[in-house]
Length: 219
Image (tube, rainbow, N blue to C red; front, side):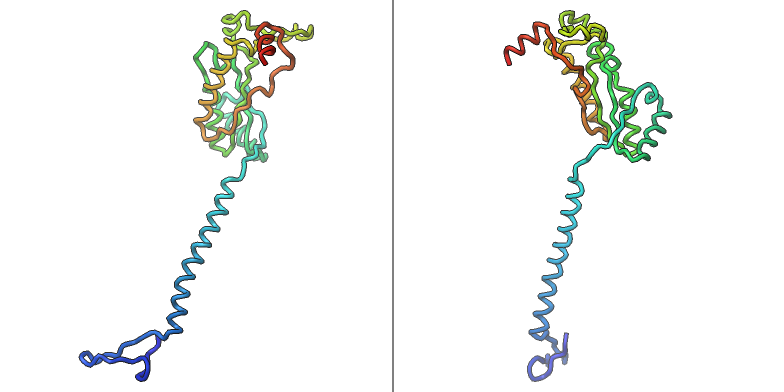
């Protein structure tokens, strides 16, 4: 602020004997322009930083995983040291197999305790978990409940293979879907959960049972 001179900017209050001060027109314009541009610049800068942060958050997670499971993973001390070593080797996730036979020993009663332990320990070490559902490891009750749900192969080489169930059998399919839904809901409760892997390890071949033939004709 500049002191105004008597000729063009000065005014006196005779009662108080004080000089009034005014802002020259050019200076006032510069100050107003700065006052407007500075907040606008700050907003633009904040918006740019926000967009960069959002872009970083939206970057897709690319799993670099190793399969981890088995009896050793059931021991919390061993599993803890194993997962820490996996992380230190540069992996960002693990692929945990989940056997149907062990997870549902009795129809409708699920045991996901080993998986829950592994997922909790993985989360503590910053690892994500993909759960591989192995529906080929049949629980003992399945084929007793559905004796006609056995996979019938046209290959003699499959005769020596473990018993398989046909997913085209309506009862077998319903129980598989129930197991998959329960395992997925359980895994989704954990912060470390990344994905469900279903069907990647199914054996090759086509079933020759009446249920598969019927579905093929319908298709």
